[in-house]
Image: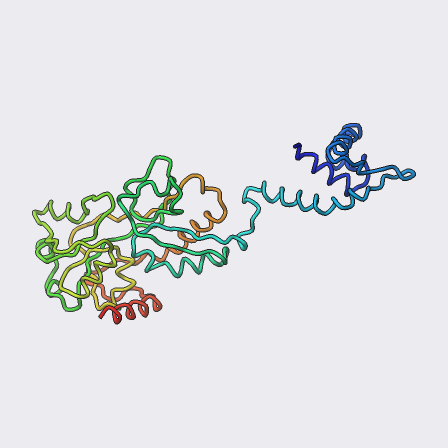
Length: 325
């Protein structure tokens, strides 16, 4: 099947003239006459017949005119770089693997931003997992977000932001009653967060340099879980600042600056090269990057219990706390 004949047939049916069709196709008149002969043979119909000095379409040609035109239009859309499907018609669920806090801090905002361009889009956040490093390569997730330690060489990444790690405790905690030193911090009972690739947390390395070791009493899967644990106990949590600033007040928690210079943690988004030029996926990445700008905060000065709060997030978390209680 030579699909180029469809383009020639469309030109012939639109112009009812071999010479005009030849001009449209950038062919010579003899070449177009030869193409018309091939079309006649393929369809078993003369398509255009002589009527005086003009060519007129046969009944079969008249019936083919609109279907052929639609086929050509669909083919042109299909071969466009964006696949020819307008984003407004894309009905797709995007699966994003990210720390639990990202879905809490940015989930609703990200969905709203995404739906401005892809109104039928849906988002599904799944938690990080050490045992699923092949998820991007195998297409089981669309985007991987976080401090990525185990990406494959072909995976593409982009920096979203850099975040500080801050300390968080319940209001009135004894740690806040005097200057916070590495020794006093390490002596407290801590709740830690399981890290991807089971890497050592930078704060522990820095405390070790000063002869201090954190007393880890509880380890939970996520920073949000650590904050919930700190809200219900005297445990100290060291978590990313965006999440802490978003929900600390609603949980009755206070934020403080750590007494050691923990390096900023890079938060990346990663995707497989097969999705690089896909318009819908590119829209997702652009929205994640735009929404993530909210993660930038001013410097902490000693204790910081206020920070920019998001009203809806606070209300939602107060409801969660009430239900859990």
